[in-house]
Every structure is written in structure tokens, then in C-alpha cells.
Length: 129
Image: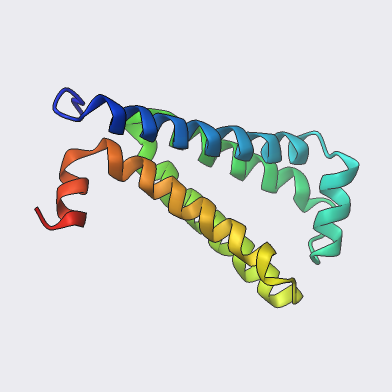
């Protein structure tokens, strides 16, 4: 996909948003992959078995890497949307405060906003131009 016709400011904003999301999600993935005490304790508190933490880390890592690669960004965004939807559902089931439910929703909005800003056809469809 050529980004020649997209204003540079919009392009940079999209890359910055994507970078923030990728960094945050990779930190979470590495915490799970390394089975840190924080990741294991958090998963257990949410009702997930300890052995699932490593698998969740692999899923999050793969999804985030796919999102970071331009040619697979849409597939990664779809997978991350599922991941973040699962986080919302887990927080609702667990009875967590609204702030815990809000952040996965915000991350999902940023995931798609970064792609929307970068892809001209998607941007035009969204804005009905």
C-alpha cells in the first residue's frame, strides 16, 4: 500500500499510535512469556490457570507482531481486537471497576485508528468521502 497521497502529519500520527500500542502489548506478552510473578498472579486472580500464562503470551506476541508488520497489520488488528474483547469480558465477569474495562476498549480504538489514518480507502469509507 502506497502512502504517498496521505498527509505526512496523519501518517506520523498513525505510526506513533501504532508504536505505543505495540510497545505496551509487547511488554505484556514478554511478561507472560517469561512467566513473571506479576503475570502469573494477575492471571490466577482473573481465574486463569497458571499453565495458560505462557500460551496467552505466545498468542499476544504473535498478534502484536502481525499488527506491527505493514502487510499483516489488518490480520494483527483483528486478532488484537479479539484479545482485547476477551480482556473486556474477563474484567466484566470478574466484576472489576469501570477503569479496568475502559482501557482495553481504548486500546482497541487506537489499534483501528492508527490503521484508519494510514489507509486512504479505509479513511474515505469511514468519513463517507
